[in-house]
Amino acid sequence: MALVAVFLSVLAATQDTSKAHIKLLTLLGRPLQIGVAETRGLFAKHGVAVETENSANSEEVRAKLASGRGDLVYMAVDNAVAMVELDHQDVIIVMGGEGSQNELMAQPEIKSIQELRGKTLLVDAPNTAYALQVKKILLLNGMQAGRDYELKAFGATPQRFAAMRENKSYAASMLGPPSSIAAKHSGFVSLGSVQQGIGPYQANGFFCQRPWAQEHRDVLTAFLAAVIEAQRWLMAPENKQYVVESMTKEMRLAPDIAAESYASLMDRPGGFAKDAAFDLQGFQNVLNLRAEIEGSWGGHPPPPEKYYDRSSYDAALAKLK
Image (cartoon, rainbow, N blue to C red):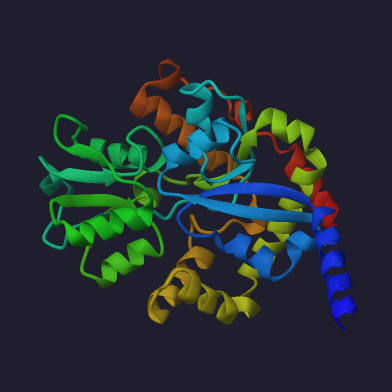
């Protein structure tokens, strides 16, 4: 029996080393589709072994990718644009995942955007992604950052929500499910949403260094195929109970908040995308927002294809067929 045990352990180690290893960088918490792909054996099925590494904020994630301490990133794709334009990195977006259901959530006593004048608002980083959403929504109400209110970099969504609960001087922040739903249950007030003020918005997606994608095309295709298959399983109505239970456990949510978050992410605009498809219209809005709010490209954004290459995604879809 001891010899059999040794043989099996050696065999397992041999099989594991035969898989291509990918290091995926994310913000706090494991993305749902990554958890599904792992627990359902989809990464193993497609011949990849995936290690995930969390970071507290997007700047840390971008620094890791730039220095080669990770292969792929899953977070808001405006960070990929920022890496190209601000950090001069050769980064490419390879697949989507989620739109944006962010809402501008404020302290319970604040009932209008005008009441944010002179207040401090929390963001992840002041010049990317959801900070630009904040700036746009307040600009629509005649308010500018630095003049009418202050932005404070504080990290990922769960950290911002926790900080707002602990310190009422942090007046508002952009939050998405499940944090936005938990905030409403705690009495926080929604002052507007991305869907209302900005429209379709390509939020979380996968991106990497372009040379890595070119050198590891087969590995990347296999990884994307596993994630697409996981997202199909995740969104299938018959798997609702399992997904809600997983959200309750992994995200440490109350069951009612997990159920409400599931309904929002699966059924409403800006949630999980079918087959993790990349929303070109939503991404054009991402670029338009950066051009308008940050003045990038002289106010005239380049075409989405500068930052997005769908060839590996198409290959992954073909692989699944």
